[in-house]
Length: 337
Ligand code: SAM
Ligand code: DTB
Ligand code: SF4
Image 1 (cartoon, helix red, strand yellow):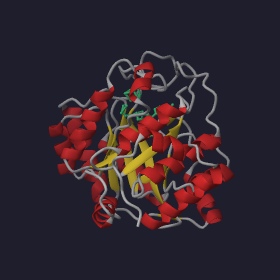
Image 2 (image 1 turned 135 degrees about the vertical axis):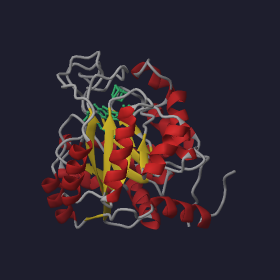
Image 3 (image 1 turned 90 degrees about the horizontal axis):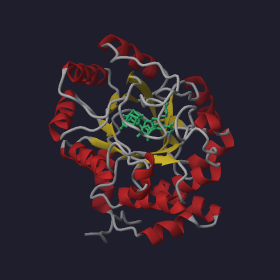
Image 4 (image 1 turned 90 degrees about the vertical axis):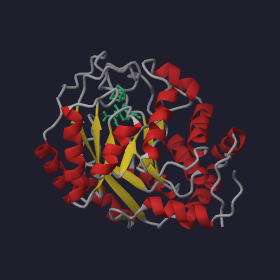
């Protein structure tokens, strides 16, 4: 049985990343099958509940107010609008709805109260609810948990060094702090990053080291390929080669065996063959639905066609990835502190 490790060194992770491609995919697939249900892909759908006008300066983001990206600013959606979106997502085959807000942080105001109502309402529909609302305190995390929140997404995006080049309005520690607050409230952690920001392979490796050395691995790790958006500082970044995506996913799978590895933004730029290799490399989750937050994504029908073609099935809600992780960690030989 493969051990769940929290002490991967940068050198080890770099060596994995640089393994000959087929050896890398083979090892990732073996580990994938040891800890996860083969051919089952978890499907999440995204909804931007509050769009644009964000005060932060994240260099990749079309929703930052300071860049002219043409994204229309929308105030917080109503509860009913969100419930309608949830129904559509469920019909489309999604087991989780992820609600995103272009906020720097959550404030204790009527908007937050409304988000709590949304969490409650979507949860009552039998869907897992995820939120990504920017920085939150421990108390806010607890309120979200009490309302029925299943997971909270808060990406570390890249390495600590590279982070400073991409975002100046908050620090890496701010990010880690929010992740800790989510953990304390016993909400499932979803945290990953973006490749294609102009980072080095070492930056990618350092990001994976930060995630894999957490006391508990995030239950889900989204790997986004940058969607370059006109008007953002990163608009001219070349598209991520599919080989980098495959290597990144395989490496993530190997260092965090029980984690849900999400093939996230950038799928419209990928061929079906490319996506197939990402699944073979251990990705077991996607965002489905025609839009991510503000940019296009394959629609539900297209993805269901792909599932049919590959013989994949969408995962059921509340499969308790938390428990799976805990069980696997209990059963695995301990070689970490
Ligand atoms: N404002 C909150 C925050 O920053 O945590 C939540 C929403 S934010 C848009 C969620 C994540 O989307 C970011 O952390 C980033 O990793 C990802 N993202 C944003 N723009 C992207 C782009 N153009 N391409 C790929 N991923 C992107
Ligand atoms: C994540 O890692 N990727 C999603 C979700 N978590 C919130 C967001 C991708 C956003 C891509 C750019 C956009 O559509 O605005
Ligand atoms: Fe704001 Fe989040 Fe976009 Fe950064 S990534 S500008 S915090 S919406």
